[in-house]
Image (cartoon, rainbow, N blue to C red; front, side, top):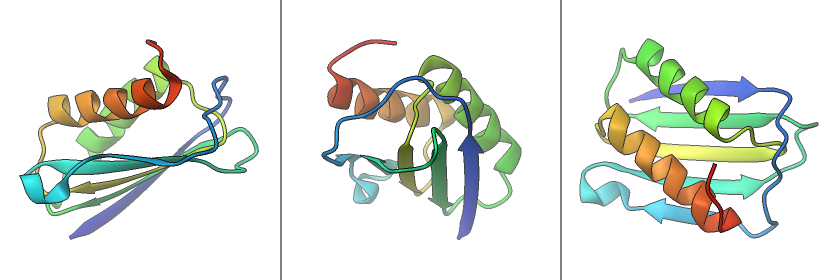
Length: 104
């Protein structure tokens, strides 16, 4: 298992107070927990993954996500068992869209 942590600054979109979980780690891909948190405008993403050695790919996917969704004061936890980057992006978008009831 590998744990990766990323932080992005200068977000402009806030989340509702209630946390949300999407996906099921036991399904063979990943789950995402997303919640509002007092992070001085930052967005923190922590990834726990069984696919060790893919930090550069995870970073690229997280940067792309933050460009689409510049979240402020948000904490995201991802539990992964080998999802592809496309599935990760879709699940993250699903989480934010569900919370905000919006599109990017």
